[in-house]
Length: 411
Image (cartoon, rainbow, N blue to C red):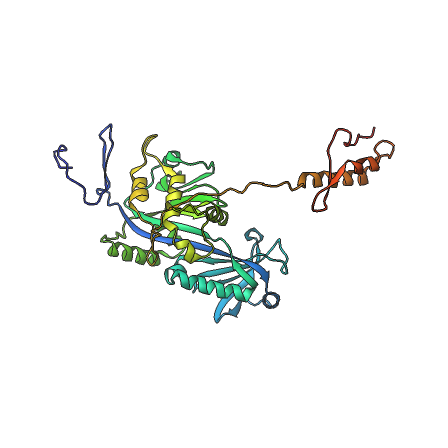
C-alpha cells in the first residue's frame, strides 16, 4: 500500500493481509517476518524384541563396578541406570553423536518380547546424517542389544523457527483445540529495584504448550532463550544463517526467534499408519522407520496446524497461521516432500470382541471374599454357583450374573 493509503500494489513477499470487512491492514514486512529454520527436532525410535542377555550381563557388571563409561560399537558411552519414569532400567548416552539409548523395560522380563529399546536422536545427529544412514545405524544398535529386533512406530517432533513475530499475551485464548491441557510461562518484561522493595512485571510470553505429551502436543516458545540455556545458541544460529542465506533472507542475531513445534507421540504415529489412505483408497501407511516418516512430514505438519488453530477471531485464522498452513512446505534440507496425495486420518482402536475380563474380575473377587469371609453352604451352595457358569471357546469359565447367583451378605 502506498503512502496515501489509497492505491495498492501486489506484495512480492505475500506478507500483506487485509480484513475483508473492516479493511484493517497488517503488513508483516514491517516487523521483518521470516522463517529462519525448519527441522525434525527429535526422533525417538522404538524397537521390539527380546533382550540380548549377554549384553545385559555386561551392562550390569559394569554398573556393579561403578564404571562410568563403556565402549560400544567403537564409541565411548556414558553408562548408568535410568529413572523409573522413563519406563526403562538402563541408559547409554553419547553426547558427541547425539544419541541416548534406553533399554530393558521395567515392566517386562528380559526373556519376553517387548519394546525393550528406545533410541532418542538429537537434532544435530539428524542434521548430519541422511534418513537412510540414520535407520542403518539405529538398526545396528538394535541388533547388538536385542534378539531379532523389529522397528516400531517412532515419536517425532517437527519444528519451524520464526523471526519477526512474538506471541501475544492472550495467545492461549486464541488457540482453538480439543485439548484442555494448556501451559503458559512468562518472563520478566521489566524489573525495578528500590531500597524498600523489588518490582517485577511478568509481561513477556516465552512459552506455551497445548495438549498432553502422550498424544499430539504443540509448543510455541522462545528458541533463542532456550538454546542459550542449554549452551546450543552458536549451533542454532549457524543453522539459521545457513537456512536464510539459502532462501534469500538474512538472519538478524539481535532479534529473538520463536519456534512452533508439533510433537507426535508413538501412539499417534501408529494411528496415522492404520487410518490414513492414498488416492487409490488403499488404507495403511508404513511409518516404522525414519526414512518412511520423512515422506509424510508435510502431511503431519498440516494435520497438526489443523488440530491447533491460532484464530484472529471466530471467522478467520491468524495471519501467521495462514502462512504456516498455506505457504510453508515442511521439507527440511535433505528431505523430499511426498508428491502422492494422501489423506491423513487417525484410526482409534475399539474393542471388537468380548474379552470376558469383567466376568473374570467378578469371579476373582468372589473367591477372595469367600476366603476372607466364608459363606455357609446352606445360604449359598457353590454347586449352584458353578451350574450358572459357562465355558467359552478358549476354555475360560465365565459366570452368568443373574439375580440368583449374587451371594447374600451374612448378618
